[in-house]
Image 1 (cartoon, rainbow, N blue to C red):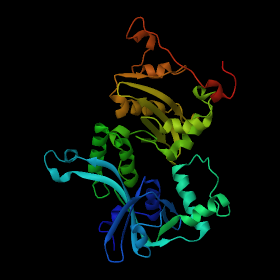
Image 2 (image 1 turned 180 degrees about the vertical axis):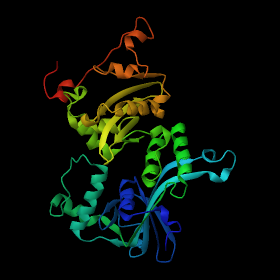
Image 3 (image 1 turned 135 degrees about the vertical axis):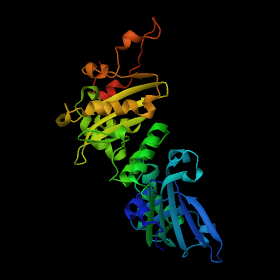
Length: 360
């Protein structure tokens, strides 16, 4: 069956990626007498099927050999009607992604395929390892593999849908992006980037306008390696293992960036926020792009990020860019103590472990 609005269709690779990152997927099938079966399950999505495991009793066993559908979905953002109309309720909408796999529910009997499926599940839930590889030749696993039911839904057809304003005019998309930025609910910055990716010809809204680069309201896991490369060698990361850079960015309340025309990430900045205080970290611009105003524009975007703009206190540490930050109103914290007798204190622990040497 053809999708009614083909503009919302996503390709199979993106649909499978959604299924892989879903916390759980939904399995829908029927029993031999036609009764519907719907289950939420953990799954390993591999190149040749969606795999589940379980006991050899229960309703799923009755459904072996039957047509089946596996689905997952994620809400990108909910748009109130007021984003597009002052009084009319019908314009309220939800931006979302969804994916479906259509196939047959079949039992996996080959021990090597079963082991591969269970390894896929372990990789999802225990990526740090700490266990012996699941090998059917290992006597520790042979009995468990024989006694565990493993089933898969074959990948006969893979469908994906991404409803991200592709049916709207550029002017309306721009207004909605501006409204999302103004609202600043959790996830809205990522939603802005999802809409822009789905509508690449729509001009950047005013809050993301920049000369020579493309600003991004949110970076993500796919940007961790590039950000690590930008930050390697910066003085504030000296003595810390570089593999900690990516996780630090991903754990931030706000993480913004800038790309060159060829798509390369050339600047990044992040902040942590608790709603009262925000702390700025890792403001960096690639050497070749310094002196062009990229850092200043990116820093302004970070200060305007909802996680930062609502905080009455914004802090940062620097040893060489005081003049830049002073232009945004920053002053030496010693001149703005809230209490005359207060002292800023810090607990430093694990320093020797992070540096790989003796503590100073």
